[in-house]
Amino acid sequence: MFMKELANILDKKLQIAQRVRLRRREARISQTELAARSGVSLGSVKRFEGTGEISLASLLRIAIVLGYENDFDRLFERKNYQSLDEIINAK
Image (cartoon, rainbow, N blue to C red; front, side, top):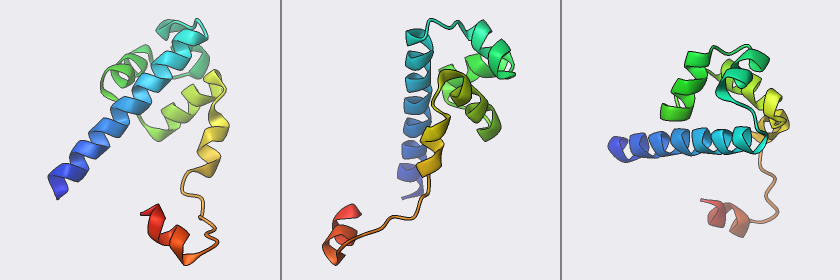
């Protein structure tokens, strides 16, 4: 089971990195410019877009530059279920 969870983590990291790369390109921002505007090193930006590896602080800085910082507000937010069926179906 641990290997499956590890694979899911790797997939999520790469999916997030791909979405960030797409949003950066849509905004017509180069990796160099993103690094300068976010205060994240160019090497970290390149590594993130290639592997998904990045610190939370750096990811937040990048999100601010791209205008997605509010997306973190709902992360780990308590879910307010209205029924037992909603709880069962959420899993």
